[in-house]
Length: 452
Ligand SMILES: *[C@@H]1O[C@H](CO)[C@@H](O)[C@H](O)[C@H]1NC(C)=O
Ligand SMILES: *[C@@H]1O[C@H](CO)[C@@H](O)[C@H](O)[C@H]1NC(C)=O
Image (cartoon, rainbow, N blue to C red; front, top):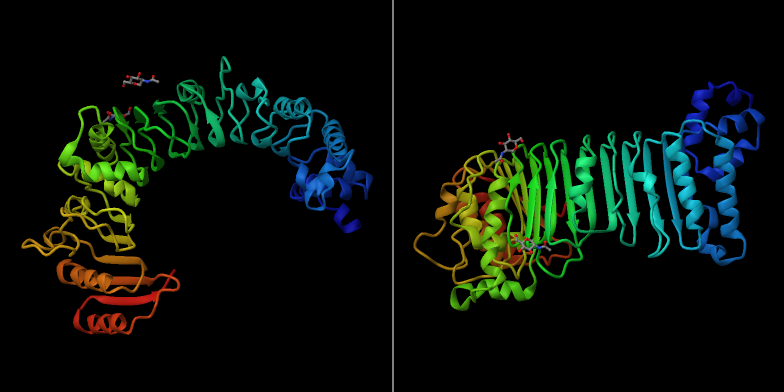
């Protein structure tokens, strides 16, 4: 005890800040000096589930929630107006929302710079408006099950660098209000329900932009990204009908996951036959604007749906002059129609990763694969400078083996091929023998191994 007590106060505070509030409070019972120090713990974690041990059914017991709230009130009272760096608040229904907002205001007044709020207090709950006018907040994490009512006038978060919004309902024009109010924002991670149909994400400072919009049922009208400083971009949403402005000039790494419904896939495949004038799919061709906007990217990952959408813009596919690594996910129900033009337009590609080889065969199936025998077979591969091919989720079928052979035959610069076997992939003797033969016949280094 004495040895510990002789530690520098600052160090003790640091140690305390790693404990949950309850542990820290128990520890502080031990010595008066510790109790005083406890008032200066710079990082608070207030988690009702740790406090309440819900696995024991304590949450429902009378008085337990009350004692959590009293305890939190006491801790904050003990800390007075000493500065605080970080608060993590995790509360669920039953905790009084008025007190929750009082705790948030308390730390805001004390100049908190990092706030992580995991609040699940039902539909009626609203965050305190003071949250949106902080001169000290640098990191803000909000996870909430319901819509956030952010029609707060005069949002101003001049220091905010990292904003994480999870499971948050977002209203019309909120990016328009929010982003100009965060002039220092570097990271925006939003995993939420975008309701608005026309979205513009505009920020000169953003470097990491990660957007998951998972609850849409209707394709959005238009999405714009005017974010020239973004280097890392992840985008998951239904395909928009238009991408009027895409400025992602400094992009280094991107993952596109545009989502199509089965119905839309069917319509796309029937497109040449009977497309109606007012068909939304006519406008999916505008996706070339998005693709063109990301053409400076060095590392690109595409989902199988995205590849299918790209079949709409084969004629307007940009040249990806900086692209070194291309990662494509395949699915048995999605086509490779855009693969040839994509490979042709990556003149400096070094590594190609194919996560799955099996794909939907169409009568227009590209010459990247050997699904359909044709005279100009392999044409798009011959001009592709790729040196390393990684094949993941290999399922050990004869079809895949013939594709492997096709790649070995037609990629002229291929030095290394790594084939990762899918878990529980059957060991077909014929497949293994073909692979062994290829390892002997080709100068390319072919390796067959278990899933990474
Ligand atoms: C979105 O923009 C389109 C035109 O680009 C317009 O027709 C439509 O009404 C807008 N929708 C909303 C909800 O503002
Ligand atoms: C992207 O934004 C930068 C900075 O505002 C600007 O200089 C550049 O011209 C824009 N590019 C496009 C294609 O709009």
